[in-house]
Length: 400
Image 1 (cartoon, one colour):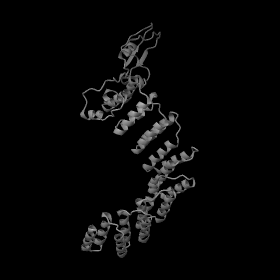
Image 2 (cartoon, rainbow, N blue to C red):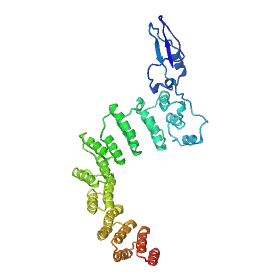
Image 3 (cartoon, helix red, strand yellow):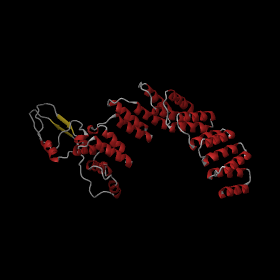
Image 4 (cartoon, rainbow, N blue to C red):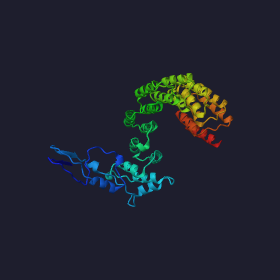
């Protein structure tokens, strides 16, 4: 709407709507005192002398105001159930906003309007914002990210760099790269300096998205901070190399960590071992397996299984058997998966007698062959065309 007036004499006007010439911050919307707004609207405009037309633009969207109205009975059953599930100990201030968000209708105003009204009416503190965001995240509510981004601009939220990092991490988990990068750019524009934690989050995100180049660039940016890299930063880059099927580069970083007496988490060692195991790289698998023990991590049946699998893929049945026996000597109970891997290694080299000898040793030591190992035997004997013998073998194992 455009209002135009021109005169050569002083003029004063009353209007039921204030002339709006600038963007109003969302915090000013949703004023809980309607009479105050009306009084302000009825104040006379200043008198002016001008030969030029007085032009003002009134944006329809700016005239809209979110009216804070308590949620009544006219809601859907799904909304009612969601409200009933809100924590009993949640404060009234937080619960009031949660109800509004659960029942949010964009036709009645924007989300910025709603949160601005809540700020004006309820006067929340940072702790209140955090409670609301936590609950939205637990609920996996579709408006979580929007609320979190709007909160960053609210003075009462008192945003810090970790708040930005959490949103970036959340977008990264959903592989929403562009949104995460937008948050990072916004953080920089608002004067926050990227630290190792934030940049490591970006490396994780690029790694999961399969963008090795951006992961490497961000890792180099971490180094330029001039601080000692921690195991999370190294681990993120190692995982990026593993996902890019470049385990050797990941192992190189692992050695760099060892020289600095920084030890990666067990999940990083396991992922690197699995990468070598899957490729049948027995030398790489053995090196990582040794590194795991040097890092003070006690191998379990799963880690031993990955080492055995490396020999199985490489067609080295005797080495697979040695790794199996070493596991037993270390006092670990072999899993059915490990037994199956040794049998698969013998099958690959068609060493039936060795496999039967292996099974008899297990029987003598009281180790029962489970479903997976039995399945390997069944498939092998079927290939040899001895179906009846297969059934007999399975019955004998089942009876033990």
